Length: 237
Image 1 (cartoon, rainbow, N blue to C red):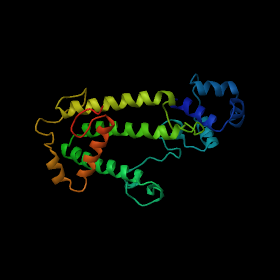
Image 2: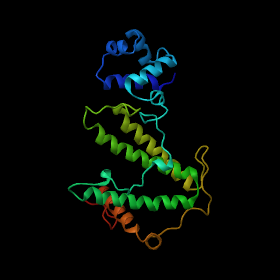
Image 3: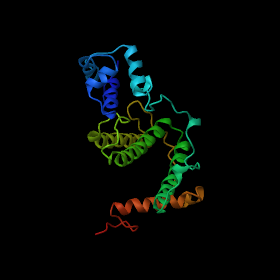
Image 4: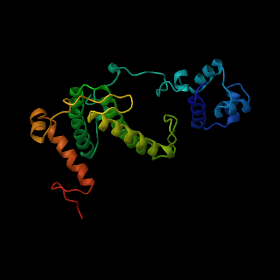
């Protein structure tokens, strides 16, 4: 089978609050055999995969770890909504702080990805995107895991390992990106040419991105303030 299947069928059973005995009865196999499947000791047949998918209400692809979507759906470019699309997900009630911070980050990302597009290096784009994705992953998992009753089946990495693993993935992606942007190869990833790094200054950013530059400047100041550094570059005591 594969390494994902034992973990996923175990998580799905626990989400249902079922003992191995009850689940085995529903799946028409012995408890001992289900235990072997969940531990990865034995491989099951395709008929059991289909039976388990029907019982837990998920797709076979999800059981096999081929997609994180329980229905088996795979996103295409057309399926991904615009970040500013209208809908209840974008309506923040009460404080304006979430909306403000979202705009600062989204506007800054517009600049980051425009610069990446101009660099025209797929490897750099993938590594920067990987670092940003890891940051979002960590933030979302903090929110999701705050309630111990929330099922963890959507995650492949156990909760206690998630921060360290995400930190490592983010650090590797950032190191690869820095290496590539310096014109050096990172393993099989090819760095950009010597004349390709963008020439930038605050004035150039303001001129090139009149709608977004102030958001980026504010994001930089806010982040460095969290580092204990004032706008003058001195450590706050």
